[in-house]
Length: 74
Image 1 (cartoon, rainbow, N blue to C red):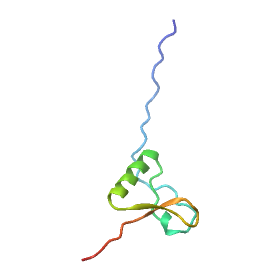
Image 2 (cartoon, helix red, strand yellow):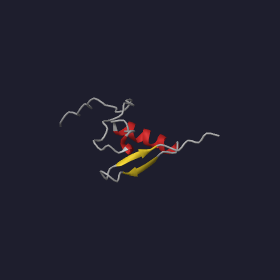
Image 3 (cartoon, helix red, strand yellow):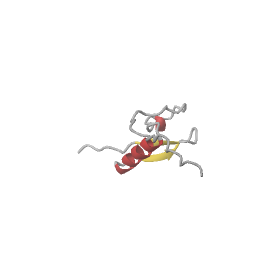
Image 4 (tube, one colour):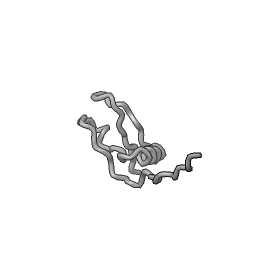
């Protein structure tokens, strides 16, 4: 009977809020890149959506980028 295998190391991803690389496209949609890690990007995207940000497709490169919410001063 084979011996039970020991579990390998457990790696948790996340914890880096540094933005990932900016796309080569000069359109302003790409001025706000998400963090480079998958989990961090998912959480940052959710936070942006809750704060009124919108994700739009870039007319120049066809990739998605972020539009910050409009701010009004009253």
